[in-house]
Length: 260
Image (cartoon, rainbow, N blue to C red):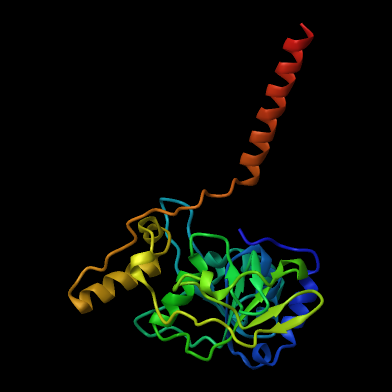
């Protein structure tokens, strides 16, 4: 997952001062912990917030949702950024998605030279971006911003290591600097179905619906990825505690056996 970091509030403050942010009416921010403060800031200044979430449950799928601050009690903005399913309205794709003016993605690491970024794995952010490009909600000139700690900005992520579906960034905000990528790598213009893992269709209703719609229009079935590159799901807090407790009990048992 993309990490939260010390000084995130300062990075958010820098982001809100960007002319791209101030001019934007609709902002897409990925649903990760590292960008939650910015999601709240988007609502506080009266902009529409678009959140694309992915479901880890096999029983449910997630939709793209739009949060309108005018329809949410300001005291609930912080909660709204975490549980978009409660506060957001599902995007009506038939009526047309809202035009997005700014995209914000989280990063594990990012190159200040090329804008190439390493995300959380599995390509969810890349697919979310490509899906909205496919539907015309994101145009060629829409800037992409990432928030990271200064230590996450590196120079050794060359663009020739990028996959064709990877999404680079144009602007980097850290607690101590705002960096503009002079020559960002090329952005994908739509979804490359041959790289989409089959299990992801069960985690995003939008992805499954779009594929079915395009296949019906084209009269053909798109091929999906044939080789699984699934990244193991991160442990929850409860799972980490159980694992730590089990390790402690095993260590205590071993010490008891040695003492005997």
